Image (cartoon, rainbow, N blue to C red; front, side, top):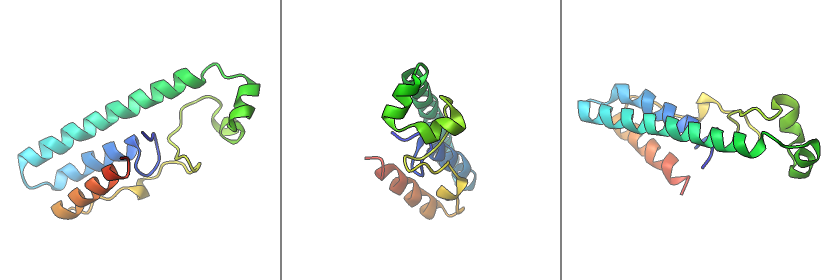
Length: 114
């Protein structure tokens, strides 16, 4: 699972929680609210795991893993960034207000993680 990339948990949660407002039926809004909330839980879990794995890294470990560039900006802090090194951006999600377009975008984003 990704933390902050274009198809990561942060984007997924905000995608669902933003798109729910345009859903014409209360049941659809409720589903998107539940899914968005679940994605926030995933975001928290991944952040916790990454923190636990990196909190005690030595300078040698950081260099050996290739984390020097990240460490300069964030030390061992958890930051929503893609594997490419690009910080998370809202430009990676869509909320068109069109039910079909939004749901197709949701499916495409989730399929990217499979």
